[in-house]
Image (cartoon, rainbow, N blue to C red; front, side, top):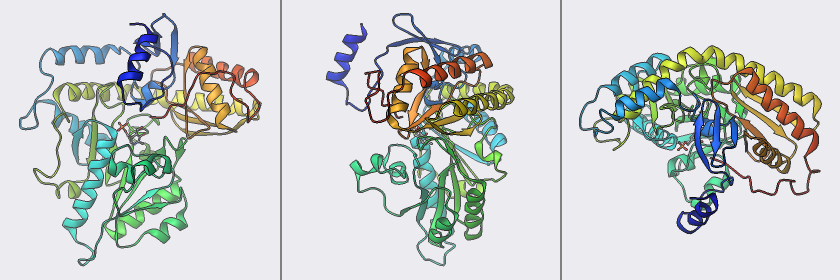
Length: 417
Ligand SMILES: Cc1ncc(COP(=O)(O)O)c(C=O)c1O
């Protein structure tokens, strides 16, 4: 089927949730994607942080084929060999003690919120007073289901679906005074992304995270970190919180965990997990043998790549900072490891740069309106970074419209996960 007829069919048949680039992707290999006409794209987005090992990684392909030939799904009414092994690996690298498996980021986050409420109820530390408020951060993103939306601090995602889950209050990002003001004994959890992704690639400050840890510890509330985008090696450590020297009570992960298959996980301390009993939470598909077998292999390969992520991240960041010295439209370069953002002076410019880079065969995207987002596969080499930096340099030098005018590239480019 041609791209034109696929577009026509999708327009007629799909709920119009996505505004896609008009490109038909047919295969991938290493750090490259290929479209239906044979055009190659260097991928610096990894399916929004999912394809961390790039495409057709030999170890993943081997495991996938072997396990698909054996057993794809069994219900959670029975055992299979891989959930416990995957939980062992995840608890070893996180310092947490138990795992629950689901299918996506938002499901992991929903589960984490349920665990927080269940823990508070079971502990009843507050002498019977209600302890169910949740503090989340302005500008955050935690997913599209109701609890996740309720804790997402961006009006555009929340408003169409109000009223949402009650009991959530938002704290200004990295504002320690606001956190102190809003925290009290009625709070069961402080929830945040260690590095905000959809909010424009913004790492939480060490001071803010430490305060969140201290307050929750003292009040026997929970610190819940969303590492769905920034976890599992993306920042050059297994988890982004490991850059800060603190230990959370719950962490959620998903995106790259099963190298492209849907799999999410909630990692929790024993004392939290012990308040959940059979029947309180569950999933039909979550933690199936195919996804878990692949995730074990993903984590094995990841161990060999963490050093390379740090090295590539440092190099890429230094190159982006060099671009900043050359181009007045670049406001700031932010991020950790291979989770990098470059804020431009306008959404129009960011939109035009994404479109022009695509035209030149390089996939990047735009988040929070005016921030270019880079989430390349962990296997990228310096030469790939050089190609993207060179592309950006040319695009920023030549093709940007003056602010306030329509971008030169006419294709619609608005993309958010
Ligand atoms: C930080 C964060 N949390 C949660 C989610 C939701 O994950 P999913 O789309 O797998 O439901 C995302 C997705 O982009 C995310 O970046």
